[in-house]
Image 1: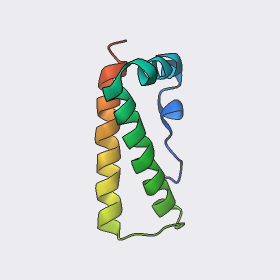
Image 2: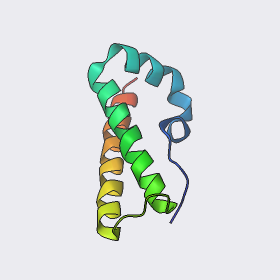
Image 3: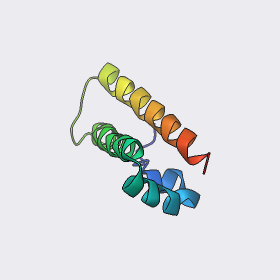
Image 4: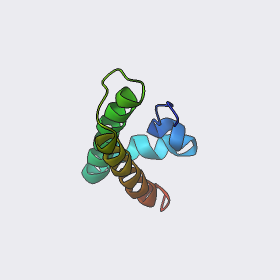
Length: 79
């Protein structure tokens, strides 16, 4: 299991400008990015035992993070 934070800037480094622009102009994208950031923070804190949680809850959050990342990528890949 990786304890890397998985920030969007690290996941999509070639899309930094597009993400910045979309966060300012697209409310749906901004909400997705914010939600991804929040879920990612919780997952990272669980993985590093800063705020441990039950394994099933952590797995579900990782799935949610992956779904959000897929939705974000779907938007970014069209740009």
